[in-house]
Length: 322
Image (tube, rainbow, N blue to C red; front, side):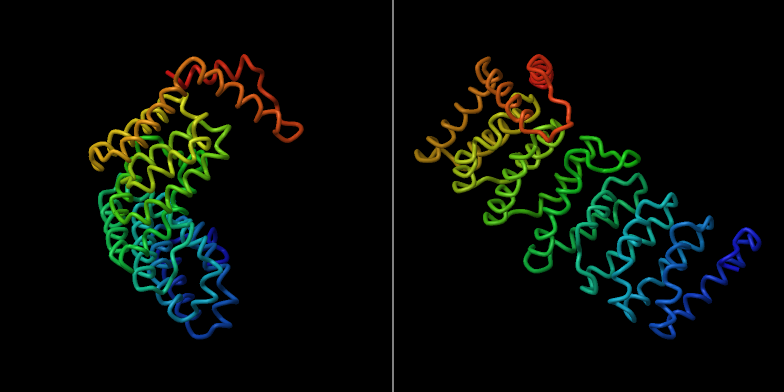
């Protein structure tokens, strides 16, 4: 019946057969491994929503009984968060969040799929996603959520999602703003800042990536050490300040630092020096330097990749300088 869905194209029949298969697979690991591929193909491809939901509801049982074997199909499970049906979407989210919060599954890079649910148009899905991250933030004194933030950011920044799920900048900002409200410890801020600055070093060909990284940084709460780190690593992002959005994010960092850290003499020196460097990058000489640096980096690109002319680079820089 399940192998010939066109011949037995009746929802109740397909659903009953699917449930029987699932119960059959729970009898032994051998039976599970024999039929797992067919089951996950059904999960991805069945035309009946009820079949896909039913399989997902039973995923908890499969994982409890066959955790190692189940792990091989984790990408398929997370992939169902993109299902066209809100009911399937919701069932997947409930299953994954339940397994993670019960510490049966370790959250990995695919958890960015759950982060996307924060902005889902379906209110129940969005609420469940925000509740999941709020609960995760309570675990291990906030470290459970913090540990997965770099993976989430890595998958969301720079418009890296496939064309069908492009994340616009406003939705990206909504997700980041929600997640970063759980980052309050100084060591966490310093650690995230280090990762973000490293990403800036390789963000030469993507204005969107630079804007996203700068926005994340603008939502961090800077302390004395992180401000000094920002000054120390100015060369990592200085040539990206021609972009008006990047520039505005760094102005936000400075404004917040002045408000939150007070007017201590040593901090004022750091803030003033940072401010001078940032404004210098926006001058005509600073923009010219950005063009020259961009041109130098294009010369280092792999063979076969088109190298932009100085005129093209200049126009690109001026465009984003606003």
